[in-house]
Amino acid sequence: MDKENILKGGEFLLKEVKAGDIFIPEEFTEEQKMIAETCTGFLEQEVYPLLDRIDAQEEGLMKSLLQKSGELGLLGISVPEEYEGFGQSFVTSMIASEFMGAGYSFSVAYSAHTGIGTLPIVYYGNEEQKQKYLPKLATGELTASYCLTEPNAGSDANSGRTQAVLSEDGKHYILNGQKMWITNGGFADVLTVFAKIDNDRVLSAFIVERDYPGIKFNPEEKKMGIKGSSTVQIFFNDCKVPVENLLGKRGQGFRIALNILHMGRIKLGGTVLGAAKRTITQSVNYANERKQFGTQIAQFGAIKHKLAEQVIKTWVTESSVYRVSDNIDSVIGILLEQGLEKGRATIEGIAQYAIEAAFLKVFGSESLNYIVDEAVQIFGGMGFSSETPVDRAYRDSRINRIFEGTNEINRLLVVDTTIKKALKEGFNVTRYSNTLLKELAEDVDVKVPEGYYAKRKYYIKNFKKAALLLLGVVSDHFQRRLTSEQEILFNISDVMMQVYPAESSLLRVEKLENMRGSAAVDIYKDIVDVFVYDAAGIIRKNAFDAINSFAEGEQREMLTRYIEQLTEVAPVNVKEARRRIADRLIEENNYCF
Image 1: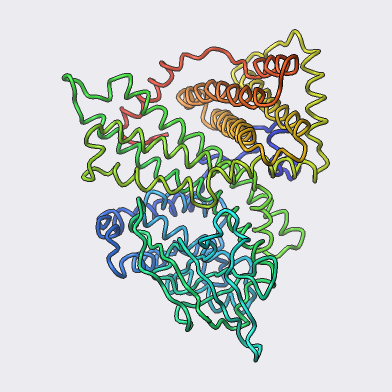
Image 2 (image 1 turned 180 degrees about the vertical axis):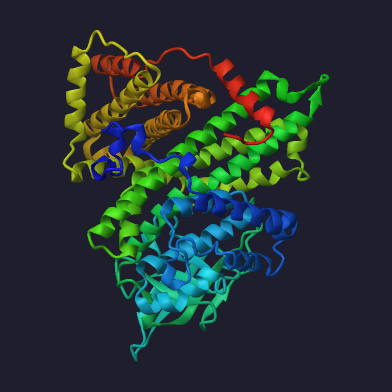
């Protein structure tokens, strides 16, 4: 891809993209496919046979499984080669996240170790810290966790009260405070702990070893789902941490936490794919076996609707996640060429796409929520029994809407970050919306282009205009008060959240057709057609809700008229399209898209 064709974060709203300039999963290399197969093989051999023992939190079991995955190299995919890792691309690390995402509680432990547990040291550690910890974290000899949340500091992470004071001899920081909801905390050897030094306004970060004196670990929390995942409270009572274990610079902890959360959000968008695909396979397996009224329930239209919608949500999420993952790799490459060190280049590359990370975390977690919920419904009464696999899938899915910042916080971040980034880049959303209003007033005889791709690109371009129009008019109306209008911000976020997957999936189909021919993409056109048609309705509803929340009289009439115009799409026989998607799934009897 040419450098000038790489979109910056959030630019998808402003620019059109060519199909040849995005990455699609059909382009995975043989090495990447082997990593995916290794992940799947590991789960089948080591994890699935032990799910009940894992959920019972058998002592030492989860840590031993992490160590076994480390022996296969699966813990070191993102760790540089000089520290016993493989130094693979962001796309490759996303593939590992996806395929391990089918591992229920194990996937949580794996993600916490390889992501928020290890990567702060990869990206912010000095050479001595990297040499000391990374080789053992990459092989599984050591396991890791991340200690940010406190009883009074959840979404507002910087309000944490854990304190660090330099000892009189200047050799240690003395930590005092409490952390909660710490994943892997029951067994982790290395903890990244966030605390404020003296009376600092912002956090600093520390590498803390489990056996340092002054640490107390509470018993395991009892949770609704991910029962096999270790989750504990940790107390620091005059815990002595060597000064050389300060991670990064003093006061850099909040920045570290924020950047690691960006990474965690985008990775969660990939992790849910593994769980989604496994659940869809379980759904269709059962639908093909279960008979009612003398007929397999897979043949009923109501079940086909559910199966097809499960596929659509998964496929468009996958299209979006790998598109942005490749963008991140491209930006990292550019930053490396400019002379940035690999860790900093990676962090800045991921941070560039904070907007996409936030809404894909929401979109992916809510897609999985739908998929597991409908899986229970397809199983019927058996779905409510703990004897069936969808019981675990349903309970384990729920945490994803809370992990890495709640979906509410992420929805607010999407709009806030978009407006701030636009201003920073010299793009005034209010001025743009005023220009757009003039264009819409003059465009009385709009001609929709012919051709499958041209027509749908036209629809998506209009969706983008609808999002930008809303951003501009609400910014102009509310000014500084906009941050308190959370319901309206949610509306705009949900509009933006439809645009990116719609465009990503359409471009994927176009690129796939160029690679394999038109016959290979018929079923994927059905996926795109249903999604774009539904997206138009979702965008229209959210836009109307936002407009009706502040506009009156002529302004309201004008804005709703323009939104109707911008969300107008050709009729789609969604019933038949969904049946074709479901029939393919039913025929293959597993997720095959």
